[in-house]
Length: 204
Image (cartoon, rainbow, N blue to C red; front, side, top):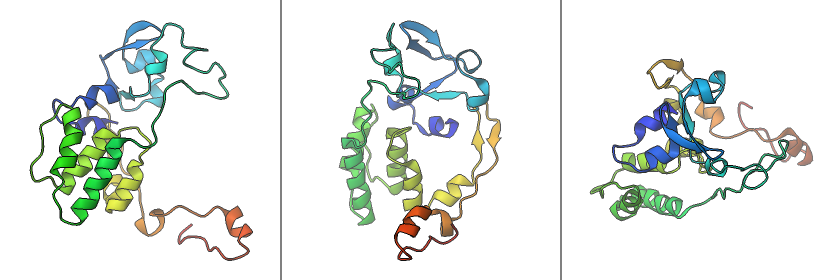
């Protein structure tokens, strides 16, 4: 999450609504709290000193259990509507397609940036689009992994270390072999049901 936090430009309104960092104020069960990894979460499960804030709204109320949060611990759910596809995604898909055709995408990317309180772009590049997708969809169901695979960036990005908020490296590297990992394995039951029509993907 440190790498995600650091990619937001100064003045980006999405920055503070996407993540919590140590010292941030937030509402929890109707009371204002200060985010502190050691006090609020289990330290061993949060190695970055950040936490996603984007989905916390159902827990801000004084009595969320049974109203905005399902009391059944075996089936955790909340009243929060999690969009699987947003208009911002449509704009950014259009922008990416236009960039692939060497067309100008300033209009689409600037629409996204305007809502985030950022200035318009002129001569937007693929690097601009990649940054906007990362900032806009942090923690959402848009598939950061699939973005990286589609762009051919997965191997290089996964090879980079991950950091704690204080700069300490918490993961040295992650191995991604594009010859194998660009696709997922086919479930063995599907191969069996196909009676030999399906062959397992290479390396799996």
